[in-house]
Length: 311
Image 1 (cartoon, one colour):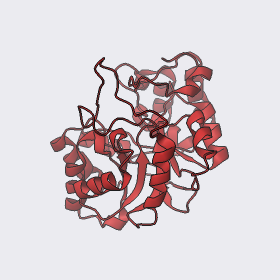
Image 2: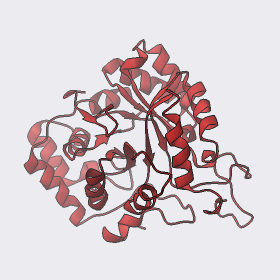
Image 3: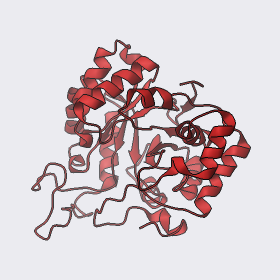
């Protein structure tokens, strides 16, 4: 990373501000991307069991020659594993070929039937997601189990992903919650800045990591006039502007790419001026859009009610 910035988590651990995302990256491509990233100088790699590519990610970590202690490695507990947290952590550790994770996240605040008709996305006879009833098991129970992982030494920090302020309010008031999540990884970019969540997490000491920071084909952030204007002014690419804006906001950021040149280019963040940061903030006043909106059958994005209708 050009600036080498980091953020201090509420448990005393440190997370690099810029990392590589690996969602939707096929095995061969993700192996090359992670290898390129680590050789370029990245030290933050974001993985997940559900992505189905932990094995090649782990192989690239090993083959890179970078000492394990110099890599901040994240993975995530999938929703069919909420009732077997310890066992599913062991699966991810084996897949990745490592003895510990720097960060382990609850991927979604949704508990799917672990004995359903599909290992990742079980459905009912009607085709709806096969969810466990709240009274049987919910994300508060899952968090209670995740807290125990810290005693094993196999996880340094624990956190969540795709949590809204509503989920945090329920979690933090639960009598079983002893540890405040260190991280909340959510979709954030100028079309979906999540101001309410940013303010809330700052107040609670919960660090935010932004995924999908560059938008998508359906959310062409890199073509926004303000982004292009700033990029031209500072001699940077639109992607570098968006990545630097995310860090300017106080969030870590995990852009995904499997193209070696883009992996390297995305690592060139810069210190954004407050004036330019505020200009990019203006984008959401005219366009608000989510990229990731899976149909879980239950409400997830509570904070969107106060940020325009993106559902």
